[in-house]
Image (cartoon, rainbow over all chains, first blue to last red; front, side, top):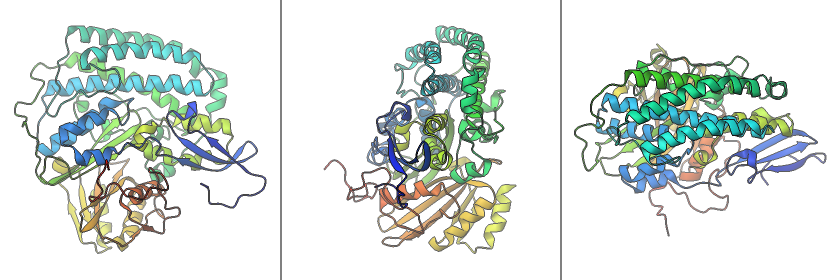
Length: 371
Length: 145
């Protein structure tokens, strides 16, 4: 029903999903198989469509804001930030420096939870159960830290148009510093358990290669892109918030295979720790909310596009305002949508077992694709 | 500067508008307006400059549609928006010939707005069920009924 090509007698169809643990959400991939090899494939998305973009048109700016924690639930704070940035740009609101620092610290902590979850879940896809227990142990600490500050563990709705609603205190700072040290001391465990594991290397080296030309064709972003050697990270390429004030590097791969994407994510976590540390060191004093935020948000006519770097790549928001309390049109440019669209091309002629490995290495969050 | 190179190469296409954008206000370095039949050539030009398709969407202006293409580059900060007005009931030329990634974006626009793309290899719904009989992002679609 899905695939248009003529079916030869020797091929058969196999459904991967929609309820399959390694699709990380409700994704179905229709595979046309020649024995163990994939001849053709087509991802079938939309099972979790919640009409976020329609909701955006029907609600006022603040009313729609809680949706931003539910597009990509793993790095919700980046989505919070992007929406706030877009609305602030429309309104011409300036955010106090301390608030920007708090945004950066919490967003980087959230990025770490996302990468740690990916690390555990991905290795579980490959059949390794133990790493999952290690990284969830670490991840839990961040969730507790963020829970205390924001009031939620996953679907955050924390930043406000013009700043942040709650300041960080000494307890937050000492807990965060403690966590940074703890995670640093864990790298050896992670690398000994996984990175140097010969079974893991054999399964990922030179598998699922993405070239630079393919990345441009499909508009890939995030670690999926950087694994192919292109150092494109919105935090550096189009600096926003307080990121220009910190010293960090953008790790990239060389071959564009799964192992490179894996390494990029692991190295990126170290950079996140560096950013958090610097932000805590340089934390300025001052207000955390802009002084004059209008009660009723009614931006002037115009359109705006803002982008942030999430754990999965570029998240962009395009808003068209017609001078009303509701946006005329809101488009959510989600990184996983573009990143998944390349799947058919890179799993062709591979084995089913590799398909699971390649799909996981793209780190897609299905609810953000479906929106 | 990439923006200048793009501007220079776009002049050959005789477009309606090629102007510098107000980056601080809108996030665009270049603002371009084109006619539907010019779009495949415009897209090819961006691909030749190694830009990627950042997003592709539409806005229902009730009397007509406005298609909105965003292009950006991995190598230099330069975002271009291309606005393409499209009369209702007409089809839009596909840019899948240049950008393979446009395949899903165009399917989404078809799904949400009912805009057909001529030259698209596999135009069908992508997020909504195949048998849906509505296009939800049209302004006359009212949800919850």
